[in-house]
Amino acid sequence: MAQLWGGRFTKETDQLVYNFNASISFDKRFYEQDIRGSIAHVTMLAKQGILTEDEKKQIIDGLNGIREDVENGTLEITDKYEDIHSFVEANLIDRIGDAGKKLHTGRSRNDQVALDMRLYTRDEIIELDVLLKEILEVLLKLMKENVETYMPGFTHLQKAQPITLAHHMGAYFEMFKRDRSRMKDIYKRMNYCPLGAGALAGTTYPLDREYTAELLDFAGPTLNSMDSVSDRDYLIELLSAMSTVMMHLSRFSEEVIIWNSNEYQFVDIDDAYSTGSSIMPQKKNPDIAELVRGKTGRVYGALTSLLTTMKGIPLAYNKDMQEDKELVFDAIDTTKGCLALFTGMLKTMKFNDARMEESAKHGFTNATDAADYLVNHGVPFRDAHGIVGQLVLYCIEHKKALDDMTMEEFKAISPVFEEDIYDAISMKTCVEMRNTIGAPGKAAMEKVIAIEEAYLVTE
Ligand code: ARG
Image (cartoon, rainbow, N blue to C red; front, side):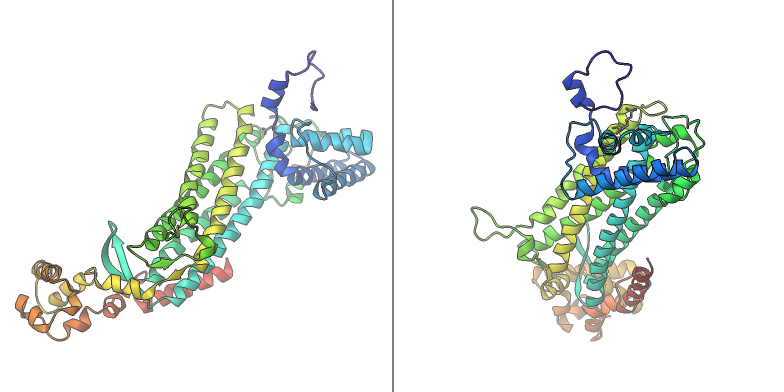
């Protein structure tokens, strides 16, 4: 057992208590951030004359040495230490002796851990953003290539109106674009440095908190020391934003699973992203999409869990807050993993264009357009709706699509129909006529694609 405290204790900690309390098994993950924060802290201490230049140099060399040795594998972070802060400090003292004991001047583990977690999260938000941008790039490519790939659009999982694959992919583009903007938002709001808050009430040393914040690329220091050590809002915001990313991925996964089914066959998932069955040789299962959908629950769970942990905590730091780490780490790993895997699957997935168009044709997705045709020829909409209802019934009975009806069949139901009905209800017309911004028509879609392309260049 290696602890940073013990002076006022007369008994050794019980081993079970020690294990229960320790956090090294998971906070070792941010050793790099802990060292980075400490280097900034001593740099500031020296500038303020609290440490000498020589002490600063010894400490920074020692800390860099620890980082290198951890990275090249010669120094192992073991559970002999209570937490990562104790590990770094104990190793520093081993290496450089008395100067090492000055590292913790004007600092508490409360503001230290608050800093480490923020640094860690900030780095991860950047990685999440990179992954989100990657999926957006794949989506934009699919959009560009498929402005004329017709497919049915659904409501209630029933074929509704024809759309294009570009338009469908565009819907996900908007979702992941909002996810990126949420990440950016969180980053901005959380980017303040808590170091210098001490245990809860600042310190009596003349720290320069603005300087430490600047050294660590923060927008400035946090403004209330009690809040600084006990604020976990940014983690809750991040869990919420990641839950939304997962919700989007899960909805998309669900569609891929449906599209990949024997009944639909809209897509063919690449062999590299599907698995077989141990008993049924014909099977090619969409396991990756199913796992992404399944893992969504873990991330939602982390959000609920941290909200619950935080709800009854009086100011300022309480040990409950240590619970933030495993939850957030797992949620970040899960979201990043799912994003990367899903993007890979999407990139290699083949869309069965002919099958999608055929499906749109046979689902009466052009029924609204047939009604609009009648309206354009002077029939009131309510009557037109009824007439097309009769057409649909007729087609169901005779197992055909609206476009396959003969002129005589059309006329038998309403004399208003003329030869130009075929053009009016063709898949191409149905989609192309929808050209208000945001609709699937080619001209509208191309405008949106240009906007999104410019967005990806600048952001
Ligand atoms: N492992 C602790 C945490 O994650 C570090 C802070 C400990 N502070 C304390 N007063 N015991 O929250």
